[in-house]
Image (cartoon, rainbow, N blue to C red; front, side):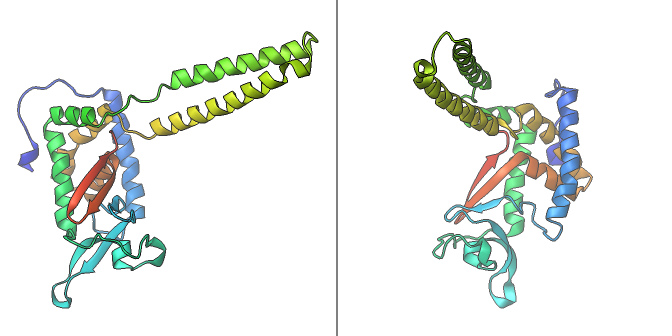
Length: 244
């Protein structure tokens, strides 16, 4: 694929450590994705969600009897699996994408990022939104509350104060500790599993070689590493990247 090659000297976008981390992830994911979707021919299988009812989308033979083609269809529309249906009145019934068309559309977006590092920077900046949670601040807050609880208990255990004197304050601190723990857990969950911009750059740099080698499993793993989900509604497509 010559369209993925570009000339000139460039500084390394990622460190060797990040590069190796991404390659290890892709190698592991190739086997996992192959096991999960071995019966599917769609590059986006497992990533697609309906923009109306939120159901997943699957590949179905769609159209008239003599001209059926493989398309990505919302489960609530195809109704091929009762447990996957989310709505009886889903409106996602227009402009169904063929598998090849939607796969190509999303792959083209990935190619753009692979060819232009500035596009990756712009995408990350555009989707930055709020600053990531400050885990250090949450841990510091929790630590301070723990110290206050320990101090009160020490005062009680040494007989300096009675239980009735610290009971209200102790209860309040325990509630504060519970809230601080919850905030920390939520912040850690929000930050876990996100691909860094450096990891994304390393993955994108491997795209050309994967395509040239005809490595279908590798391409599948790459796409699923870069993208969290793709939402489709009547011809409109929104890609949610794993690094944004």
